[in-house]
Amino acid sequence: MSNFGPMPRTIVTLVAIVALVYLGLCGALFLFQRSLIYFPQPRSLAGGAATLTLPADGGQVLVTVRQRRGPDALLYFGGNAEDVSGSLPDLSTAFPDHAIYLLHYRGYGGSSGKPSEAALFADALALFDKVRAEHRNIVVVGRSLGSGVAVYLASLRPVARLVLVTPYDSLLELAATQFPYFPVRWLLLDKFESWRYAQHIAVPTLVVAAEHDEVIPRASTEALYKRFRAGVAFFKVVSGTGHNSISDSPDYLPLLKGAR
Image 1: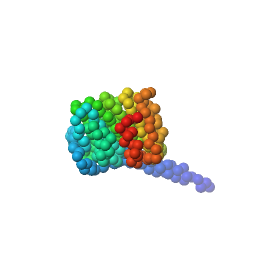
Image 2: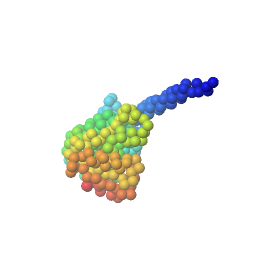
Image 3: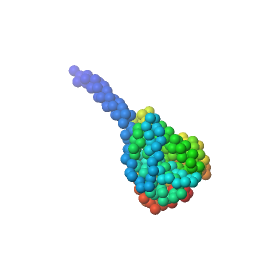
Image 4: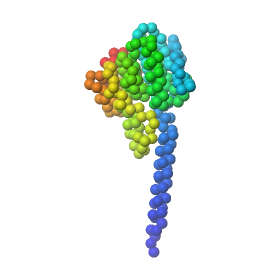
């Protein structure tokens, strides 16, 4: 008499359980994906700063501003866990003659709504168009997550200069590497595929990498750099720094200012 009769049913049951667990994990990853991308921060009080308010889908997006008259301005788009107003003192030192605008993404720093790729892109365009009415020469700086916003903006608007700090080629590719056992290409809503926009940019661009970046792999940053047309982009590595410490280097602000 055989003892192997129940085995097929047991195997089928186990496979079904594993499949259900896997589908559940995929569902959780899909539902909570933006909480893994965006980490909203409150806005600090920056002395001497003003606040610009932009309308956004029935709400408002706040922009910390250091006002200056003249043709020059700088737009700054920060990282996914950054209070951008904290960068105002250093940027004011590096760009003393520029009006400075630091966008608080939706859900960050008092801005209403929730962040998404589409929302960040729309707000960046609205900010540029608002600033362009008063300043003709606009430098755009994007750091980490904000590099994707900056690349997109520069592909559609006449920026004077573009600076990308610890940028990535594609957030989709990074997520696929981080979650190799999940169908990330089907699940991810905010792909931030910077490579799609880099090839359309013709203005001088500086790509800045941290030597020991523990968040954005060097390969991803270099891949983005290679997307630009020949002669458009310049690549610099800040030695001895990590993803979050790069701005502490004495070489950081001179790089941003000189863009070479």
